[in-house]
Length: 114
Length: 116
Image: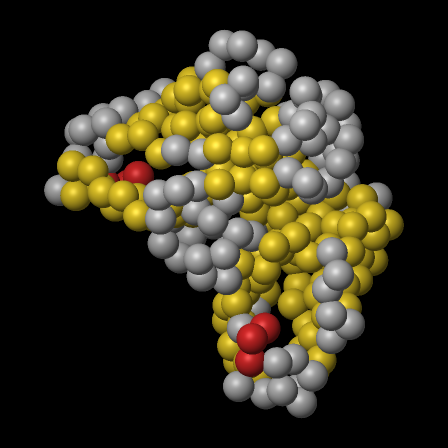
């Protein structure tokens, strides 16, 4: 069975600095999707970034980028130029195509400090 | 705001009550999900409906009963709940899972449920 581990329950970063959130996963699959979702306080969870396992190039969305290490089963999220609005819970998730099972980690609570 | 809405946003109920949670999506998706979110735990997938057919049921107690009358609406009927069922219940939708496409889920704001 697939598992997703986020080993950092809480993190903080100064505004305008860079922070990296870690995520590791365990699977025997070769083709899958990985996601980072953001859940701001009392607001809806939204997708931050997506990575397809067959793509070697790391995904990037504006200030958000990932470091995808398939052999190491690692999928970290880097937030550059952190903003106060980045304060949220961040969840890493795994999904095998052709199924409906999205496996989520326990989340990392990120606080951006002014 | 995404195109997934949930009502009510907050619900307090006694263990003998019967209530229902409602989810509606306006995104043209054909798969809908119920998750339970508890503090310091991973999101727990409860049920999945694809094209109005239940395709996942993760050993959820029978006191939770889902209903999907059409691809835009999803309900979770609750009866004789326990205090440990108190949590945030999230609804999500996506396009039917396949080997291609974005496979991205869109989430609703959740219903904060408290069982007394």
